[in-house]
Image 1 (cartoon, rainbow, N blue to C red):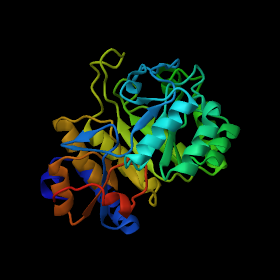
Image 2: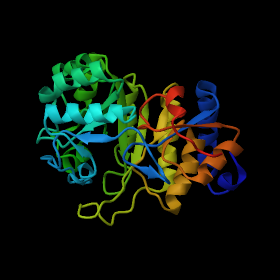
Image 3: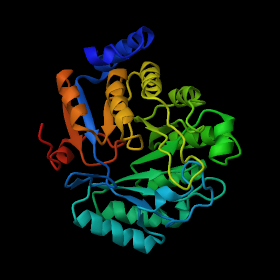
Length: 329
């Protein structure tokens, strides 16, 4: 651990991070991958992996941290015909993949049945890698997504009843666990996401969420951090401290030594966010969505090799995609 970081944390955390660092290097080597998702611009670059909302701006569930606002910047495709047209255009313009998302109904489900054939056609006519924000779904829906050609499913996992009910407006956390089981049974690659600090900025059920996820075989794990949005009940709430996020990542690394762990794109971008990036690397992350020059320099100083890819951080590293983004280092 580099000196200026080590001097700023407690000994118990230093021991935890040193252990996580050792386990990470043993299982993942010295590469560290930085990602640029399609909805984010970095200088004059933008990722080649846009998000598409299948419900436009509409969401019935209206979770407390989002209230449907995260749908607004997405490309809108509310019919199979529009989805096909948009994806064919994106493929022709050099995009590498898409994230299919949208608002949920009152049960936390997306209208997948309507789009199976469209997804199948997109996969047959393009080379787009397709991720889906699956929502909470039954096994037949998960299997149908797999058969249509979806490459991976992203799903939010919370670890306690209070968060599931009060924040996500679900009946309970068992609905979440069952959905994760259904996705795993379908054969889809599954990338669980944990939104740290969902209980109004407090770490609440996140460690139990890790325990739930560790019972399965995820392709990767993404940890994002509550980013308070205006016009939501979370507006004005302070997200968890960087050290809290780093502890969560370190515990995830020790529980799941072999899986890639990413610090996702939703997180603070201030001074605290910079420290969060630095601590995440020491704590065992192997991926990061978006980056700062200071963080890339730190990766180099630690003897790691920075790689870059213009996709969501859930997508496995591909050398052919890395050649499509130029970062001076």
